[in-house]
Image (cartoon, rainbow over all chains, first blue to last red; front, side, top):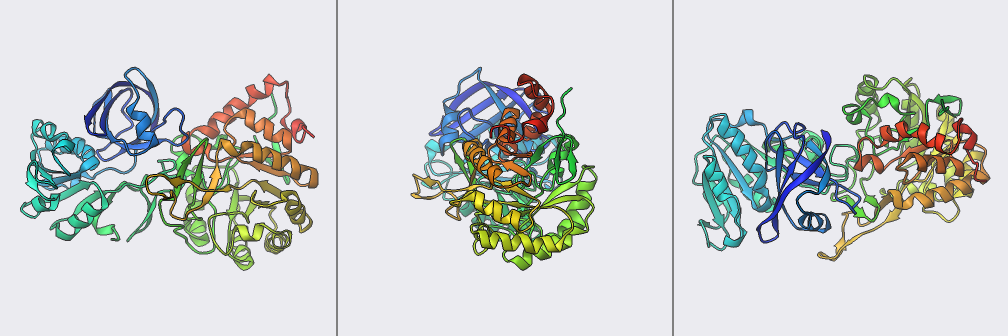
Length: 243
Length: 303
């Protein structure tokens, strides 16, 4: 974990209620895809945890959906504004478990953390397949960006307006893969759990107090005892999850 | 040079800054980011006889200038604290620590205190009879003079170490309860625990936290804490550890003027992991600003 001041480079609308914010500053706190940042928002008491979507030495990208007062305030921020951010929080995805042909499954705002993960796996020479699940055409973001870095991309929409009609598992069931990584809503996790044929890792979401393991606000029960989503998580191994 | 030392029942602290129980784990998470030996001491995560997961999630809610938590005393149980947490803490913290203990019956308090009493790492006990997040125990014992006194007397028999009782603000007359604890043998009083609070999500129309209600803390409760410490100081002679909404060195001085000998910092740790270190570092300059050279001189000064 590192605390730092970051400057907003851009903050733009990507899809209805979904924004992309790019911040500039010392990004060295992050060590692995799947980690998150905890952003202090002027006027609000608690920080807001947001998953890392992409980063390089100087910038980091976050994609967030406006769901409450915190993300609403974020959506109104403009370039040049400074933010106090804790970086490198949580236990991210374990790249060493990927095998040669990992599949990455993102549902809605679970899509962003898959991007930096895909980038790192492709860099490591893996054959990466990505399944992106959305409700309809208007919600889709980052399909092109995943293609540009060399991932094989499948899009699913519930209404069938783009890609495969249905859910991410309708594609997953047809694929041959070595390991899966996923982030998204619980119903999607349960569906994946029912059909997945390999080991995998799920990234969980929970309302957090601190974001760094102090308050025990975000705990969940696992087969290995209670774990803090912010500290031992957000990424959990398939084999330790109690459904 | 200013003198920031304070004394809790014969235990001298370098400064009065104490991270509050439940906001600092067993210390080592914070030791990863700064040397926690700069602290006066800290109060470890509320420990019970048996391991506890706590309440269902979500158990956190944002509030104006504060936070509601309904964690519900998640902890690994006293045996794991002795075998795992304290040895781990010893590697990063050279000072003695405050053992915060909780229970669901007087027997449980006595059991946990007895088990911890032989641990050299523990300076004093902080007996939490004020957790608002567990049913049939915790706060129920802290809301009447008789039951508070009964817990105090029982725990005092179980240990030779000083026993401080942590009180709930969710009562009509906190000073009388403090006095009952003192009369029953308490070596000190710690106040305040969190205020009962609630938030409702307008979209779902339901309470934000799964347990419906939780404990409200943060800067918003600071004036309530100062007032209650002031009232308790009038009633008891034993030292008071002040707690509730402290975020700055100025808050520390204010709380001490109300009557606190030492001061706990809780919610502030959750939004700024360096909060306690920052307050320790800022304290001498803040004292100098008001011409304070010896911190103990201001205890209860507002009376």
